[in-house]
Image (cartoon, rainbow, N blue to C red; front, side):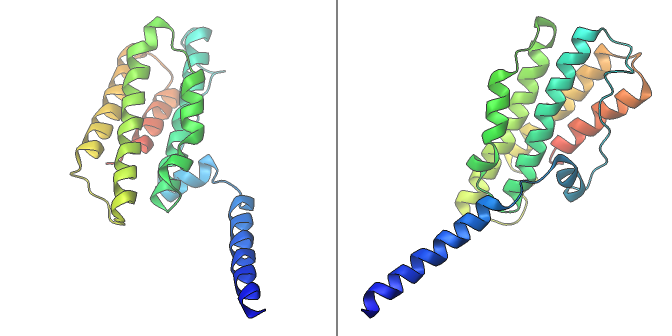
Length: 176
């Protein structure tokens, strides 16, 4: 009799902990920015100097970057990288860049992939410290900086608010 009770209690406790983990609300974008910590300036589609098609694409790109920031922060605090990045990969597959933005999107995608690969390595090794010299961290950082430079080059006359948004999205994505 005792043998049956102990395994049942172990299974019940594991199921309860699993249910609690799944019931916990996901981290919001604002919470992720606060955790970094980094200022968040939201791209303002209604007050932009660019054409509406460009603005709509960038709005969607920045939503994807926000989810990558959430994934990075949640993976850094213990969620498996695979689980943390599920939404990021789903959003990436539905984000089609107009020709003008293909290189930009590829650069951002590369940066996100390098962050993910770094976090996977870190978790597999059981490491809790941050390694700024890791090649994936360096590549992710370079990609975020290149994407920012590309946006600033494309939209030199954009509003100050949206230029700040460009910076905040890509700086928050950047590990360094």
